[in-house]
Image 1 (cartoon, rainbow, N blue to C red):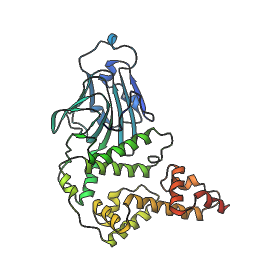
Image 2: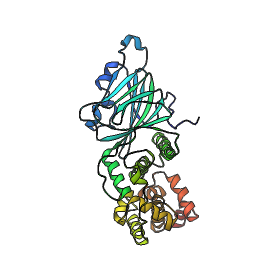
Image 3: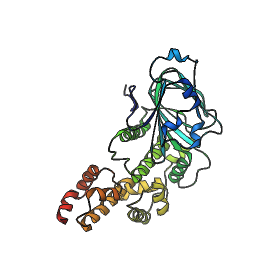
Image 4: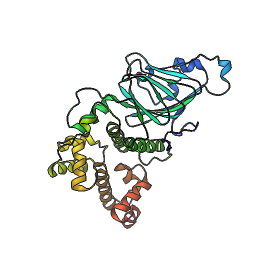
Amino acid sequence: MEQPPSDFKGSPPRGFKLAPIQHLRDLESGSYWPQLRPYFQRPEFHRIRYTILGQTAQADVGTGPVSLRGASKAGELDVAFVADRLAAKMLIAGPGLPDYCLTMVGQGNLVYSGEGCSSASVDPTCGLVYQGNPGTTLASVGSQERLAIWIPGESVAQRLAALMGAPARGEVRFQPVFDWLAPKSAALRQLIKLFMSELQSPAPSVLGSEAANRSFSDLLIYAMLRALPNNYSDEIARPRALATPGTLRRAEAYMRAHVEEPIALHEVAQAAGCSVRSLQMAFRKFRETTPLLAIRQFRLEAAREALHSGNAGTTITEVALRFGFANPGRFTRFYKAAFGESPTDVAGRRV
């Protein structure tokens, strides 16, 4: 059977700030949180509490950390890596968190209990998405590893409204446990695989700038809303009126005017006067492309103009970063594919 892209094989991921936890009391007291700075600094995250199931004396634990916590971030997404040697239980205490958590199990088994489900088993073939509601628990049967992507509830609501073309009537409630191998989950799985690869890369090509982070957040949240069953699934899937060519031109004008800034699809749709879904359909019908590819093309065109008009001291890296391309090598490949010449050729003619 095909395996999901979350198999950590016992190794902590690169690119994460790590907090090895040597003593059970440190895990249960939460004293490790400062070690994860500058990540997970919002006080709400401290409402995530852990206890060991079947209390084990420190003398029986053996050598090495009893647990490992890792933290990273990409734009509005907070990312946690959790590895426990002992059976442990996570509890969301107090008033909870205003976030959704998308979880992938790398090793071991978990039992989830929360809104929409009193008890459900989660293993590496299953995904889990839940709100940070008070009383939510996640218990490991034994040793386990997992990746948790925390997404602000406000961001989910914002993207949902953009998809439907109107504000939602209430919160999104996902079916908590789902099959990673189901056809609708494929795009989401690939995005998370790319996400992990980028977080661990010494020179990220997709998450190396604020503009890239915002585009990726868009992709992940829209993919989650479309792929995972929720109380708005039928409305999201309902056919929408196609945006007119005039609406499309307004969208393109907005994209061109903001080539040096982070651009979110809901902002483009708002400027054009349509929903994100209608915008995507219009780009497919009238331009045979997607809004994100159109944004990239406009950034490339602006970079080309800057290279042609710039002075001899302007470097290719400076131009790439200016227009949202964090990786100069990737920028060069896109540029050559678009214009049939490399940025180096243009820069050489300026000398």
